[in-house]
Length: 464
Image (cartoon, rainbow, N blue to C red; front, side, top):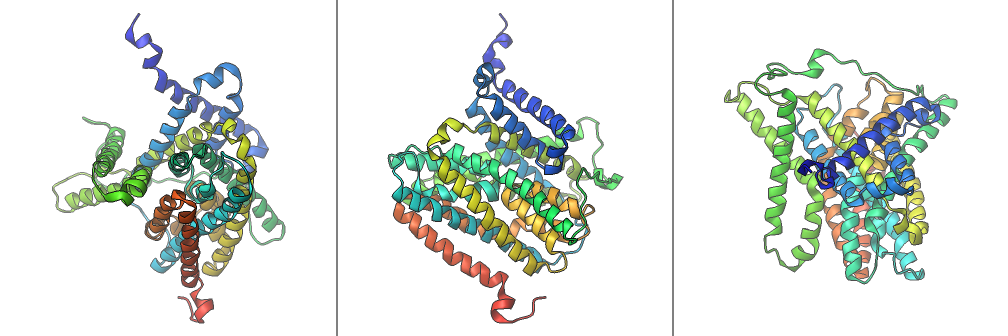
């Protein structure tokens, strides 16, 4: 028998076969069921839910590998962020630096609100509810699932399971976090559409449900002096190679940090989290590589343009679609049977808090395009940036307001504002005392963000 006939030679490809078949089937289902189409649920989420529904049935459940799906989720997150970081962004409408910074502050403070709501639910439940499978710090997975999506929900969920295990608690952190992320997509899409319809009936906005076809010009597909589509090497090959090269740098960086001696705090807090920040390191190294390439172009050492924004967009979109499918498919409901009540409370109250807070911020910061600002941010802070864009497109199909650019450009200030918050995510689960300290710090940080965002109301100054 040929070595290639062995099942082990096909194991990983089988997992990708499952993902792509589910994606194609979900897209077909979504396009032909009006209710699903109007819901704006991503086809990738429908595909993941389809796999979840089929997993309990005999043979299908045996071929879906939970570990493999988690690995796909992890790497798809990092590769997607690398592809986005490499792009030479083109801005189509005007926005201000201050507005971008304020939007980044809204993003970071929304993570804080979600973390506080999560802890206000899970700490009392842990103290009053006798359940050996429940972890007091699990509420901190709410901003990871809602605010960051399946990749970060998985990364921190695995880390929290390890912390809980060290304290004698058998907590299914990965399943808990991924369930929050899947629920976030549903909340962002369904709640967003329902609220849009309510506003439309009240005559507050013009809304069109359905697919919007983007109009592309040649400049959208390629920029001046780019390498040809196919010569000695295909243009797509170049883009994929650049993404993988940057991701290799990310691996070497994380592996190098893992080998460092950085003290007890570093060993217990930083190192367990470091591998979970693959998306952040991917963004940083992607930006650095892009700077190097642009410098080589300006100095005429590199004669042709190697970065193609359109292709990198497609690579990132594919990665994020795979991430959503695999992250949802990796959920094991058997691990959640004993903790469904806190999961339901965290997801429900987290959705309410996010909706109200983002609406208040949007109405204050974006008075000229309050609804566009709200839907773009609410979609992102319960799903991903793509969900925010999908909701925004229903009321601003040509992205004529600055809402789209605010959403794209706020990434850098959001990372700067949110990085200390992410560090707290690794400090909180160490002990109940650490968790309470984390909650206090989050509350203090939220006050500071609120003073900045609503400074005109607090201090009576006119905002410009």
